[in-house]
Length: 421
Image (tube, rainbow, N blue to C red; front, side, top):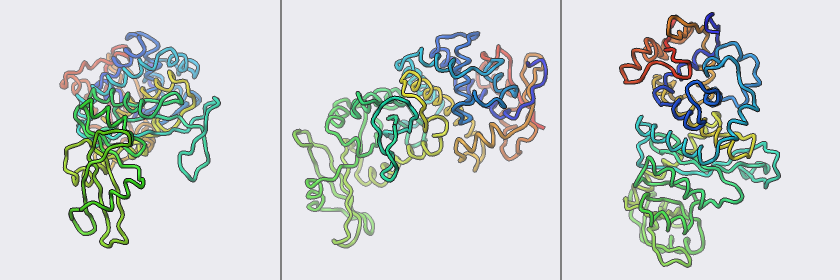
């Protein structure tokens, strides 16, 4: 196909090839699929990754994308079918997907995607169209009950980047899923402060994380008569008008081990006081934990809002092999998009995944052809303000200067370069 020019409306997606080379994505994919440079299975996985970058769940049904270079992007002549994708993912285990996630996280740490000081964890419920008989739950109190896939994510709260995830089922308790999640997270973060929500207010979690000495933990307390009584009897320190903090020690019922209880009180009049309590095993000052650190937990909600369309907001099956594999490959797509996004000037860096896909990956016209040993992607209408030319023109030289082999292994060792007209 490359012996002739291929006219494409998806030339922007080819920028991610450079980012995958910087990430070492192909080696990760080969490790997960067990394939080699000439294998078919790694190319199926690469198609799944590129679909995630486009924020499309079933791109194989979109006939108009064929013959526009998308299949070439994956090193193939055709788009693979839903059945081929299912068979590939179903043939690989949950353990293999978790290894893939941990290896990706290590690479992202080296590439500066994480600071590793503050980690946010969150149970994230995804609406699923699975045909299985399963209990229905409410994602929001005002919404009707629906079938949900329960996932657990950890994220670097300072950079807003995901680290690893897990998937729960009726056989897995939240506490066990959380401990497993933290076990995978420690590959990139030791002695980090973990920010959680009330679902993690649990004696067993505090005890095991405290004994492990790998993480600190800060969790809002579930209000009870005991907590309300403590809140009203403490002596508070003034910090600014309407804001006070007090501390004491507290143990869970049936346990002798004590933890720091930090209580914030808002309001100037006794009748308008509002209390909020937190339990922690951190030694950081209470005012820092409550006013500087805990607010960073919302970065995980921002991640789901901004990047959810890449494959973290939908689930068509509850087959764990398939779901783990597809979402893990979506993490790889998200990592490449993150690197691409940070080459853009503001305000374009702030675009969410869907906007970026529409404007960048599917919003440029151009053509694709081979010149000697190089695939040349010509972009005809890339806005100057995106500053893409600075980062991607003369790409082989730029990659070589970074110590990266400029030949693309899944594109049969062709080099890749860009022209802008």
